[in-house]
View (cartoon, rainbow, N blue to C red):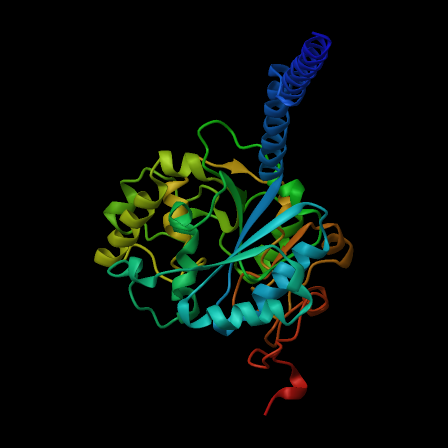
Length: 362
């Protein structure tokens, strides 16, 4: 009988121990299971990270620069000047032709530009077939990359707003200021008007530079007259501009530009012998009275129109962006204000691109 009582006590103790173990295990599972509040907290953090990433994307200043093999050093000087004068989060889309992709990458990776954020975009010149007529007066203006500015939505870029810069440009200030230009509703781009700076008027007169539509379009042609654009309306320069890519798509700007290229191919309504070459007139037609005006100090130009006509040094130091538009480029000779361009020049690691200077003349 005593033995039976002992067995019962042992069994009771074992039963109690098993119950305790079960309760402990249940409690442990409950304490380690994610609570509803923890799940919301986790989602909240993810949303915050996503918002931060979107904010970072919005803060990027995307810049499109073309880089031809013949003028690679010019493009790299432009990029260097932008990078060196800004604290903005800049991303470069460097557009080139297939044959120059390798040279472009080597120029960057083997020079002080190695740390820039960039993407090389290959441009297909076949999109210009039947749209550009051969012209011997200034063949450099017929280079396929001269028309990249027409095709912004077709480029492999992922931004709603971009800055386009010609390769004969030097930036002397924070590019973020230019990027923050507020475009008027319904405007796809902002350009600098050719009538903006009184300081440039004397130079314009001295070199015979055209600043009106009459200098770009052939008003003897009925097609031009039918546009209803007054020949003395002020022109603008499309070598530097801020673009709203969504608005560009919405208005089918590329199609409109191509239409006027094809029209010129058929009846020659403009030519590169005129003031701005063949890339400017379609822009002037399509954007007539439909563009926002840039701060004029963000596009001080005509530096390449004469080997002699110069701006005052004080004026050039105040300029935020300099443009050597015209035939006298600062990497060639003769040209003016060479020192302002050459301070940003980076020698080509491959040695293919070199400066033309008097001592190197043969």
